[in-house]
Length: 429
Image (tube, rainbow, N blue to C red; front, top):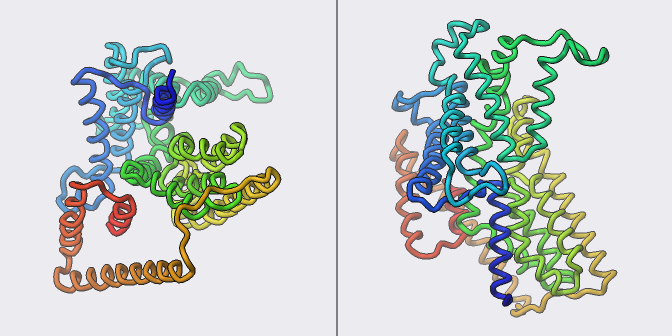
């Protein structure tokens, strides 16, 4: 096998690993399945944007309360769990089997049951009908299977043990024995109210997690990951053990927009690990540096792991406070990783990469001054420009600004966009 073929095979394997962990490993060849796996996530995204915006209240249409929104959110997630994720690793990935279509539709119905029959369920709390219990049992079982497909057996097994403990309390050892719950009480709690599946965790996912992950995905698709890597290597690549230090910094920067450790490793590792090996790091040490840096990316605000969003609801503080408290540990962890890499490079006598361009002190100062001036000019233009629009347009300012951003942004798409321009545009928006 040639080197080019080997590299292509490695890239395919990496992309498949990310797909298995984040987006599902199924890539159907048929026209209809492909369209389904494109338009369903698109519809999910549009629903989340609509729910998070003030538009439902402005136009007084399609206004969802939190319980209805959670049910719709879960319905989208369970449908994609059965259509995008194969049952087993040996299951077909180039098409969606009939049984998965059936399970996806049944799971979607069970998940959206609270939305479809919200009024009826609210009139009979604690007194479910037989159909309510059937839907709850089927929905809970299908949710456990969807969890296994998307996240693997461990979480599904843990959840199953606790559910079993709820009903099997009288038969447990004396130390952990309890009265136990009936099927009616258990299913009412788990599926027919907002205390179980439709509780705080799903509410956080519906209201906050999805939007932050969407923002990070947009930046990643726009090339932000590659931009962060280039920035890190431009600043640190020439230092002692430079590629390893750049790997740490680039993983931290990628962690700004990615809450997935696996995606972070694949995004930065395919570029940084070969360069670390090139300057003298062993394969094991290069991989260890990359994994440690990418795992810590979940600590880097603003897009952190789901636990950060759960803290907002359980602890009762704002997400801004979580960001403020997470920022210092994230910085400290990356400073420690850079220092460890520096000590390792000194111990091994490693050098950095050769600098292709050497700037004089005057050029560096000029570049710094021009950067500061550009930031000041852009900040002034944004502040006074939007301030002027507020005076003229009043309550319609948001629409005028959105129109101007669209006029300025979409022509950029005709050419290959620069990630820094896209990042600034999304930040201003």
